[in-house]
Image (cartoon, rainbow, N blue to C red; front, side):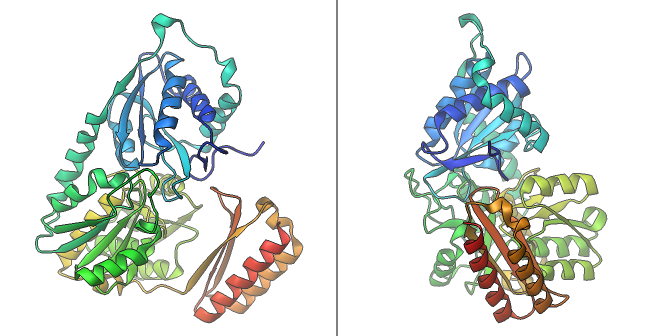
Length: 444
């Protein structure tokens, strides 16, 4: 059987290939594997219409095992992580497919520290899910209960508001794109606590418009709005607010790599970057690595996925890490990607340096990089395809020593991801198209 857990939990099209029966089984499995007697779990969701259905199924599964469930309602994923790690909970489950389309949904399991699970624990949960009917249950007197815990979001709000009040962004005009997702329930007021003037777009969720032509997956929409409204900076969250893409006053997009570079250079300059370390994924731009190393820092690369970024940070002692996609972990404030915290930290550097976002981003020149997602029924067979391997080696030869080709199966969909990076932008685009076309022919 294919593995249920991908790069970021269990995902699929809601009620098609991700059904409430899976959520019910996950609730039972989580209760069996992660919860000690007397402990409870906390469950949250983003703004997708299918969220209520999955929360109800998880709740039924966990309570059938004698475990209480505290339902937070609509919250950002980093808020759920904060609550799971700072309360009396044995685990947390977030119902969200993050940046994916509205018809998708996902199930992310967190441990008692608010951290995503190790692969080995996910494998154990998966085995329990497949035999959920065999796990037994409890008598009526021992059944778990379900509690409305929407008030718990105030704990996250207070913590982030205290952080925001130290930023000192008075006079800055900010445009925040909430992607019609769960970040809209707290993001605007937290950013306003910095002293900035905050305007908001795409904060009218209706259950089906999450991430639609908005948010971190469509920064061009925010870019147009920043220019037309004349704001100083724009921030785009994704559907569950665990990632952030920024836009400068001219409408230029500042991606996760440049944001990481801005934060890393600021900390290196103040000798405030633990071990001088920055942890990034294999997809992060070589230009970021060059700049950080030239400033005396060290770049550590991990597989794609913010849980691997955090693992790399904990092992190396680094205090900053993240991905090109906009997941940024600032370990002094949070153990998960948090787009709202990332926005606060960018505003803090702007205020401290007295610089615009464009001026800060100019210090992080990036190499041309192109990525392609290739639908592939046989995505895991790419390493054994000799023709594709020959084409990859030939592309690497044409790119020279400063170039890279990275091919990997998607962890969230039936696709192969192809990344090409190098100094010649036209060559990078040509090779990305060529490899993507060949992969599509060979793996379908």
